[in-house]
Length: 238
Image: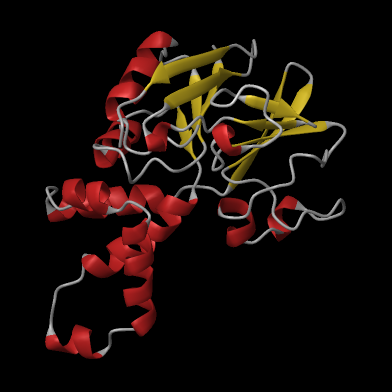
């Protein structure tokens, strides 16, 4: 019975399946997915459908799910004159923003689903939490997609807004807690300036960053919290 953490799969279905095989993931284990399942890679919806079938998986929301949900809810509506007349200009900007962030592959697969499957996928993602707190081997961990934006020592987790949890990047040069570790994705470790091993899981000041660039065709990372063993699978270029 083991606990694994993965993040920023970004449509890399083959790498995701290889990772599950590599870690020998079983029904007795638990997998936390820290957001950004969608976009960029070729088969994001296939990953969502697989996750939906696994009761031992806990998914958190990333900024790509946040963008997608707003747009998919709108795109699922019937195109009528009345709906077009009520069109909020902001939704057009939301769709353009999502498109600029790699929505094409998500939309292509989503459109192949029937209406009931589309509703099930959206409903599944609507239930994603924004953070989780877990205790393992005497250590406390906060799991979140991006980090804790606008961090303050006396700020409770429930006080953080969506933008602070799924978009804003933390300061890796500062330890937010002396007695807790923050595990996040969102920022590819290749772009963290103080990372001595770009493209591999980053550990510093009680920050653990596990986005190793799968969304850009580099590698997918997975961390076993029980042993702190790191696993990697190379990805296809997006």
